[in-house]
Length: 252
Ligand SMILES: Nc1ncnc2c1ncn2[C@@H]1O[C@H](COP(=O)(O)OP(=O)(O)O)[C@@H](O)[C@H]1O
Ligand SMILES: [Mg+2]
Image (cartoon, rainbow, N blue to C red; front, top):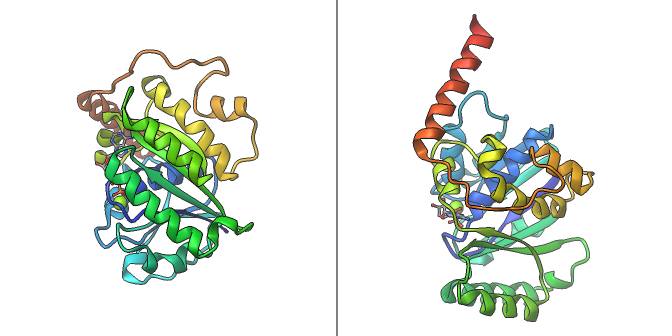
């Protein structure tokens, strides 16, 4: 079983959002996936509970309650809490991939710098068995801190896996127990394209770029264009329709 850990003691940087998305994607691709929620706030567990029935199946592990990190899974995605990093190192130390989401704001960059010093001090940055990468999350176009962020990334020499823009699509879909991967691809095409490097980096899928894109319902020559915004009403309508179809398929 492969372990992917989302770590950053700073709250609100996107650990839960990214953990849930990786879990959905891996599950959609046919892997047996568990989402281990280590956060007493149980955000990813709540999200799992609110997931519509028709959606890809994901195992729930209440790690915040001490549930053992085991089971017949291909991959376990660990959603860590916003807490002093020392408490989390035991889990992270056995992971294959460590992802650090960072929002490019001054406070978050400072916190990331501290995390980097910690990881450096314990020798993880030189550990050949562990791959560490950062995701710039909630990036707004022309954010002035993006430059500071970029220079931080260069100094730390940690891989920058991907950049995810700031969009209500995440907030709304998570609120409905969904992820972007559960929505019609054409609606969230700009965002799905940003996920491609993350999926490649996880190493979970032995696929070429074009295959990954087409699995997401996107064409090889896809180019992000105008913002494609999914309204909450549209999302609910689609969800209700899907649920109704599922009911018809299953029970009628
Ligand atoms: N790329 C994004 N664009 C817009 N909102 C986002 C994005 N990523 C996360 N969020 C929102 O930011 C808030 C904090 O994200 P979350 O994943 O819960 O962070 P963490 O788990 O690190 O505390 C949530 O409301 C989430 O929906
Ligand atoms: Mg969280």
